[in-house]
Image (cartoon, rainbow, N blue to C red):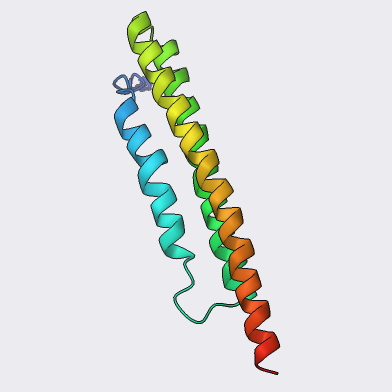
Length: 126
């Protein structure tokens, strides 16, 4: 007698639970920009490298915040939420975007101030 080969049925994965829009929003708009700023902060003496590093961290964190706000709007639309929810999330995304552009602008001004301070210090201390 030959033995029959038994094939087990493929395990069917349970349906994935969608990621919460709130968690995506908090992580992308608050946690990641804060973590970038904390990680790349100049904790020592102010140098040209540290000034550029802090500016780049701010710009990249705010860019992630803008993209996250847009992603939350897309998630809201794709999950077929009601029109008031879509409008509310769109308004929040516009506020986040406006705030992020303001933070990027102030980061540029702060970078120029820091570079001027470094240049003045170098000029006074030959």
